[in-house]
Length: 470
Image (cartoon, rainbow, N blue to C red):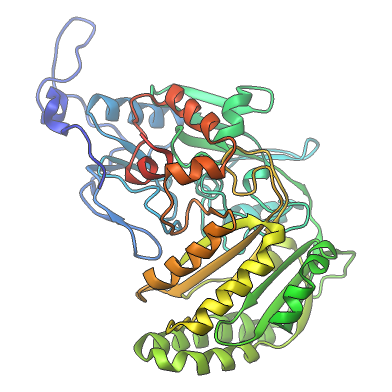
């Protein structure tokens, strides 16, 4: 866990004399309305691989209360970290100081149809945002395949989907507001505090605590999804053509086989033709969640059975085509818990890198129960975006929760690093500031801004010390 100054180093923290009033009288500092009575309870992330025991947990109801949280924490010698829904696989949000929960920082704050903008409180879950926008006849341009994250958590760690011209959720942000280390509130956009905006869209929680995020939105549209099994050799040989020929292309390769499942999403004039109830339940619930969880459990107990299970699993999902609103096409339920590592490579390097991963798995005693996911993204202008300054492809590897992952992830990571890979900020990796400063041309720009906004490292923790340095 991170180090901190002892909370009992100030009178207020000991419960003794606190602040002085206008007449010079001292007394106990009153309990703030946002303090959580369950302050000593530990926190654990979604995958269960990261836990923390904060000194106290708070649930502020707005920017003013959040600013007071930050000021009081600094007075008490405590670090501050905001946590979303815990869907990061790293310790990015872990703290033994003050843990800020987003439960009361939710909802749509403003909707400007003419400008194509929606402003949401930072703790708003993406699943609720997507559904609310659809009811209003609007949509984000792109999104990831999981919607459990909060708006702030998703952009802070660089959550992305796949796309020829769009992918990152953070790249759709047009403005944001955050509370900085001195308790002040900073509004940022391309026109206001532009230097902060260039970094804070993917800020890792290092620059402040987000209170609101403004996204660009557009009129609701339809997507036609075409899912189709395809041999791995064909996918890799036609990778450039598949990416260029579709607005959104991704595929899943099943280790221990030569089989992939591909997905192509393109805009459609309609009409909507969603999967039938039976087919949708069969593919998205029974096969992708229920049966897959059973298969993962069997594989964890008997690893030698995994190659045979993979061969069956890779043939279970047949081709299908359907048309629906974006969030029902881009996203899907994920009820099987896992741990994950993902690297962004120069897009041209992806086929060769994946072939190396396949050769490594085939030649090793590893037994891999989860498919490998491959997506793409265009270059963007965000300082610490994994797609910053270059067209990118993402290779993501997963293992069922509770399965030892170090050997597999470590072997894949060596391949990714050899191709100039950038690790996803919210997923397991072993890179440090020395490596990352060479992988990101604008790394120094980000750390210099951090020095200016948080010189005393109010928002620091062990993860940030490793990836950003001291």
